[in-house]
Amino acid sequence: MRLINNFINGQFEVAEHDKRFEKRSPVNNEIIASIAEAGRSDVDRAVISARNALQGEWGRISPEQRVDLLYGVADEITRRFDEFVEAEMADTGQPHHVMTHAFIPRGAANFKVFADVVKNVASESFRTSTPDGRGALNYAMRVPKGVIGVISPWNAPFLLMTWKVGPALACGNTVVVKPSEETPLTAALLGEVMNSVGIPQGVYNVINGFGPNSAGEFLTQHPQVDAITFTGETRTGTAIMKAAAEGTRDVSFEMGGKNAGIVFADCDFDAAVDGIFRSAFLNSGQVCLGTERVYVERPLFERFVNALKTRAESVRFGHPLDKASNYGPLISSEHREKVLSYYRKAVEEGATVVTGGGIPEMSAELAAGNWIEPTIWTGLADDAAVVTEEIFGPCCHIRPFDTEEEVVALANNTDYGLSTTIWTQDLTRAHRMAERVDVGITWINSWFLRDLRTAFGGSKQSGIGREGGVHSLEFYTETRNVCIKL
Image (cartoon, rainbow, N blue to C red; front, side):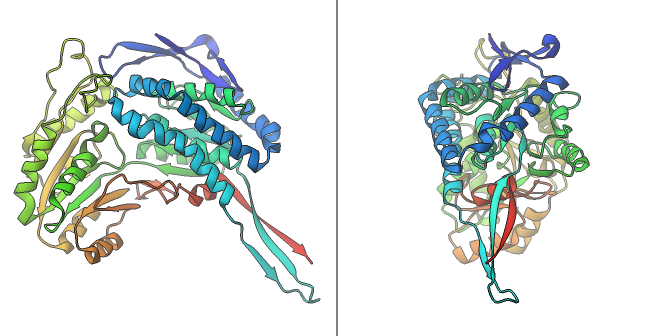
């Protein structure tokens, strides 16, 4: 069993009163780690160490030196690639190929990409006339925002944590990270990497724990935290916003989604089935950008439902180290029960269960894990709970539509606005739909095809602000105007 402590000022430390909690494997619910739960004094020390680093060595390092250090972080993650893969699989239970081909490589890339953004970004300048004719020069400079509180989720923990830590450090800030209590391992491992490449003490800190009355609340309420970036549930984001408002601090939120997939009859059928399958069931449906509502043009409806059913029934459950496995468990028994409650509710509301809806039979060594079947429904009303509420599990409801006007109204009939995936070979229609569906990210004939330089975020209750490329710089820096009389 692993012992995971908080990482404060470059050192791993036990928590005050040596308070700890257990981490269980999603695969079989066996205890795999004992985690130090940070108290208020631990969080205070972490924030103070971050403040001191900002005012000390880290604050005096040139942007070029920061870029070199962050490249070193990425290279060290790559050198220790197998350790990060193993830790992430232990935390999440997701298949080996998902870690090796997506989540860990992208996590390492976050440091290089944002180092390059900082290195190559240009500042605006203006020549201004003055009454004496000599003129003045105005130019903008970006300065670090300060101490950033990073609250990261459990569904892609390393990828989504580094998505925030990478640009924050590239811009010269320091961070205090509160990873999800469900997935603490890679955040601790990154602390070792920071030390080994020479990142100054206090620049990167990790405090473990929960939300209310624990590390999360203590961090968001700390008066010396200058900004908070969060990925998670809308309800939690609302509570964080209230805490941030008391200190007039900036926030960047990526929250829930009830994303729509839209399939027109002229689509590339096989590509559309594959894209919707991935968007509904990747990571066992635990993806904020995932598709839980699917709208298929009526001439294609029955064929599409049957094809997606075949794909869903082809998944191979198994241990993440089993190379034949391509489908993992849910993160916890509590989350599985939440998803199962929606499975039951769908039936109560009159759904036709196309496939799934229960718990698969597993081998004896895996039977205690958080396994659940990929599930497809049809036949529900547009106001059914399963159609309107975020489930965050491997499931989707498929409904036919007849006109473009109808499907736009259906797609926008939600409190969320994170993403959509649209499948059509009519590019004029594709551009038209991209304008009309109210989301932050629109994929045309693709899904989860990401360029880290582009804007990422959602509308309505799916988030506040944008990150990615220069958009991250806008959050992680303050822009200062300088005016020089010539």
